[in-house]
Image 1 (cartoon, one colour):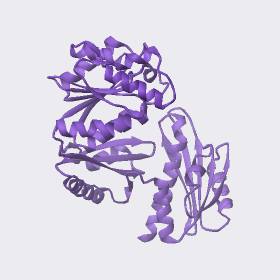
Image 2 (cartoon, rainbow, N blue to C red; image 1 turned 45 degrees about the vertical axis):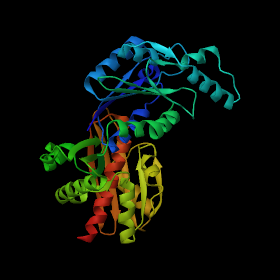
Image 3 (spheres, rainbow, N blue to C red; image 1 turned 135 degrees about the vertical axis):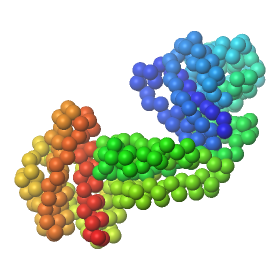
Image 4 (cartoon, rainbow, N blue to C red; image 1 turned 90 degrees about the vertical axis):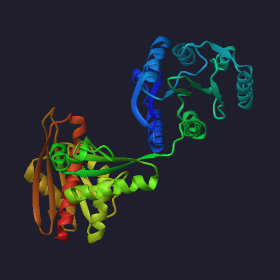
Length: 383
């Protein structure tokens, strides 16, 4: 399978003024097509640095896809930089200039003289017409590999990648295989403890297993390469079964499924409802459970409450009907503390949890811990 790198171009990316969504789109589509993406790089609008990044990428990968820097202004240097990197001059394409003028006419506008820059491409490049914008894209083939340059505007980039670039790569590299991924979501188990349970699986080469920690949750990513989607899915299914056998109900969902969705399923299966009370979370808990079927409403306070006060508020909130979930958060840099209260017919309990992350992440963490406890208690009703 060929390897690829992605180079995003734009000083605005380095300054944090915009978020790079293009790389995610390209990487996922390359993955699904069976192309290994080994590196994603960002460089500013500087021709020499772009050229150096292109040369380095071509020395490592079969495919380099760049986004950005194809506009008409002086600070859009991608065309010149790629030409320099592969050792050819820029050449003016009259037919391309004509297409650009037609595109502007379609929008009821006249191109300015600087738009003429967009009709220059590296000598010998294959032009990719852009029917959804004014910046033409192009492909440069070299002995080292292929450079595909796409506009940075996401709508234009996505259209061109899907309709032009991916079919080209499939033909060029005879792409037949696929790479599929499935993400298992776990909660209530630290990353280190989870790692001990499946460490041997993390050493596999195909399928591969990787961990990604979030506040109060850990994702397990299973990735498989195969000649067909069916074969890749079968590989993933076998490994997923093994992981589920080891972790059991610690796994609450897959891919786009959420923890609150898992709570909703557990409530519905048992015909139960609940209310919620939060203190010191800024509305995070109520926001997350607001659309859960079986949620009967809740209350909140700005300041955190200690154990007995939290339990009393949670009890009063549920008014003796259904279950009551209460959370109180005491944020502190590197030492966040949360109390989670649960009121149910079988009894009441308050659990204490600690989180060493930044306080701004603590409301999400505390909510995850509370929902995990609620789900766990709901599941034990089946025992």
